[in-house]
Length: 199
Ligand SMILES: Cc1cn([C@H]2C[C@H](O)[C@@H](COP(=O)(O)OP(=O)(O)OP(=O)(O)O)O2)c(=O)[nH]c1=O
Picture (cartoon, rainbow, N blue to C red):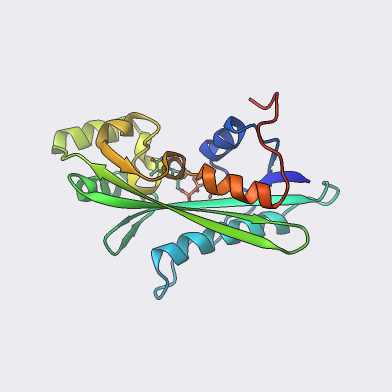
């Protein structure tokens, strides 16, 4: 069965390519990412991943071969707060100052929808420890431009690696696509990985 990736994130496409999966990217209209006040962060990221996969399925252009659609969502959670992508530099600064010297959780959900209507969603939780950060370091990191399209305002796969002291969980989950869980979903749908010639 063909696989479609319902994501605009270049990181998710790179991670799928890394594990040797053949797929096409699907352009789909954004979904409403507003949290429901009563849902937990774990419920929120799983709902987002599920809805992205379903929106991708609904937006599949007529004439395309039927296939499975993968969607994913990543949020940074600090205490009761869900930190999404920053609105602007001030917002990114506030997030980084809050994360400095603390542990937080990165929740990453991945969801696979099949043409039959079946769908499975899995969640990965990773604990990340940031070292303490001086204000001028936060400004210097903001100057790299890296924080602005990333949940929690950092990218562990880039210069943000220097903010992190320790991690317990899934590195790929922090980057945006938890690969152990993704492999389980691919296996469930009998979609092959470790294919040659995808990288
Ligand atoms: C914490 C962290 C997040 N991120 C990124 C992963 C996601 O792309 C982004 C979180 O936003 P998401 O809303 O999960 O995804 P997205 O809008 O980028 O892409 P999509 O089209 O699939 O909805 O933050 C990193 O790249 N590195 C990190 O260390």
